[in-house]
Length: 408
Image 1: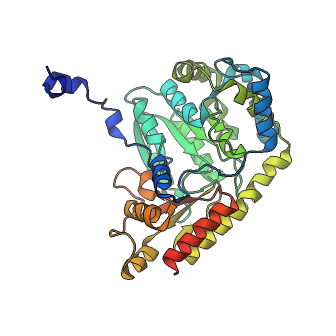
Image 2: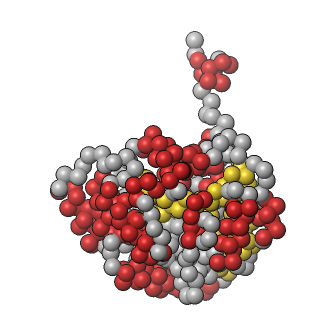
Image 3: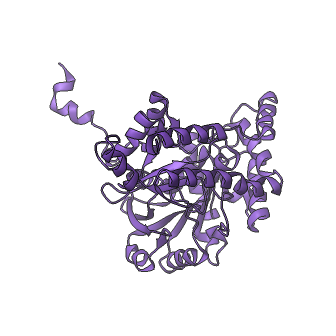
């Protein structure tokens, strides 16, 4: 019997309902499109310049020293100690590394492990929109329902009344990403105090993604939510080695949680991945102990690229929103695309997905459709996200192609 044509077997072979509620990563898809068409990849947020030599050397030493077997499931002692010292040095936060730290396979795993460990089916999780595309699927995979609260332009600000209205009797947690992907928003202390007040009033958990913590510009300052009064025992702080050290492929991240939650996160992490790569954990411990001058230079290092990216987009007629942190630019695409279509070129449609496809396949520069950072149909159709964590040659190639398409 051909099982593919029989009704019962068709039902057995269907994907789960959870998997049908979200799509593949659009960001990673745009990288595949860029590779297929030889486009300059300004879509996925990974640097194309080398990681620090000292950090690479530390990884090599660890491999040569035969640090090649499983580390302690929730993290090598050296790395957990370095994470605790890192929090104390930069934020004056004391961490019990034996009871609070879980080292994961990147911040991506830290987020899903935390949600699986802390929310139940039927709970609601508040996510600020636009959002990094993993957060909605993470909530769904953990059995919760995401409730979205819009960040309003031009400053991507929180409307206090809208946030209060989103909290219901089913709300279990809020997910906060600052500095923010995709907008570059750095949440103000006033906004953080609003989140903290609501979490305490309604007995909610805050889960913060702080992976871009050292990449901030101008007067912006990153303030970990756990440092606000009353938040130490109800915040899970997630970060990673990836962005601060240009090692996105190493997959070493961590979650710092109150002891009463850390045990659950560790159990979930154990059965998701067992542990992060052992030799890279040793290199991560070395990296986190780099001098303050290294961390202080990150912002200026990326600020030059930020200014260049903004200048190129503005000259092409886009309307970019200057980010206060991270290494992305969200930009309105309507005016230059309308002009291109009037000149007989450009995508047939004016939406973000058509624009991103045309830019990658015809212009040779890949970006991410803005709508991928919103619920289906809820926003972003007039925007693209460009990343500028690229070496000079890459940015110069993108500039030349964009100028040829829009100014030639």
